[in-house]
Length: 260
Ligand SMILES: Nc1ccn([C@@H]2O[C@H](COP(=O)(O)OP(=O)(O)OP(=O)(O)O)[C@@H](O)[C@H]2O)c(=O)n1
Ligand SMILES: C[C@](O)(CO)[C@H](O)COP(=O)(O)O
Image (cartoon, rainbow, N blue to C red):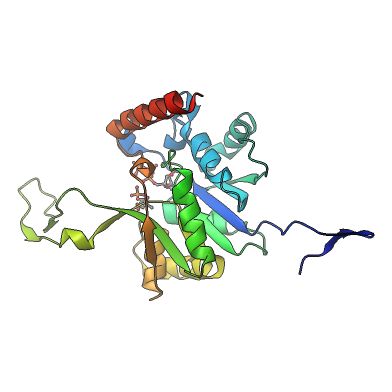
């Protein structure tokens, strides 16, 4: 039950926001080439991180966004975000900035560590996926709220995938298998979780040795179910220089269509 707003006012108070987003943004972006940390590089004249934060802030349920910044640059990131206001959507998400760690997994764990107790649902979204559409974010939140404890957006593959024996010595790699493509999905973010499950998965993660490349992978290691909802081709990760060119083209098309 909601509490009344105050004595003499029996309207229900707004339900406290219980969905938070952790945005790991502490990576260097080595595969993108020399320059500032990837999340701070410009896309359409605005830092990639700002696009990612705005994409998350548009979701009505999101009340808190935790940005995990390059360890040496957390203060600069705070100033950057203060200089780039969130879109006016009728609700406001708080944005906090914390310093990140050596790996993505470390950075996410550091972000989870500052979530207030009342948070029930957590999304984890790469700063490097700045153009994720609102419909993808909403689909992930809806699936978690409908009872799925771990949800990933994903798209079918268009290439055939080969498994190889990686030699690492420059010689041709022997193919050891061809997984059936219809059973494969390319996984994106935001990934959405029941907060307690994600905390358990990250707490167990380091003990497992090898790092996981996504958060759902840590949940899978616990033997807990993960489900897929439709992702979006524009939610691609900016990893290499060609991705940045593609992101610029997508943004230009959006701006022409939306008139901003
Ligand atoms: N120590 C790290 C490494 C990565 N990330 C974040 O995790 C997301 C996905 O990682 P990726 O695209 O691999 O980014 P980088 O690690 O920066 O890329 P690279 O491997 O090319 O250096 C990015 O938003 C990145 O900032 C992070 O927060 N902390
Ligand atoms: C989390 C992720 O974006 C899902 O596709 C991906 O696994 C991150 O991998 P990276 O090697 O850190 O780019």
